[in-house]
Image (cartoon, rainbow, N blue to C red; front, side):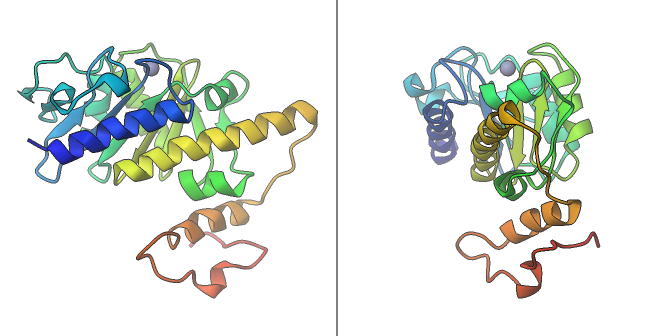
Amino acid sequence: MFEKEKREIIKGGMKLDRYGLVSLAGGNLSMRMPSGEILVTPSGMIYEDMVESDVVVMDVNGNIIEGDRKPSSDTEAILYIFRERADINAVIHTHQPYATAISLIQDEFRADLTTLGNACRGNVKCTPYSSAASIEMGIDTVKYLGDQLAVILSHHGVMTVGDSLKQALNAAVYLEECAKGYLAARACGEIRHLTDDQIRQTAEIYKYVGQGKGQIPKELLGREGVQAQ
Ligand SMILES: [Zn+2]
């Protein structure tokens, strides 16, 4: 059942490892199937050691449909997100160190780098502290996410979401890249900001980036950015 999607999840986990977003068995990945089932990575297993049968299939209330493994300890939070947000089909949780570090010093990561607006659709909020494996991780994600694709769980890690696993993975990888640049700049001096209109522009432009997305409308490309509708 869902062998192709299970392979996609395992490969996604190996990418998290490759980009330094998790260590060993940290974090988790989950996907919603068009027929409603949720695939979740197992608890405490290293991604490169996983095979398809290790990925657990369940319904959105947590009833196991297929799989003998214990699912991720964050499953309650993950299912909460899928129940509350019908537009979300993938959730990734990481312990990526640079983005998480930002939650130790501030409540929001402003999208002053275009890549952050591109991949996460704007400023990324830091949620209050909640313990690992608690449903509050999911409740806070839904509460602080808005139209963006990531939140930083303060003192803990990151949750990214998407309409596909690829979109959630992009958000996690590019969030970390931007966090490195931001923290390097912050260590050296004052941060210079993009305007809100310029940040909106970075999110709008990215809707047209990639195969099959059409050309970027010229009116989106001015230096002043785009105003709110
Ligand atoms: Zn965690």
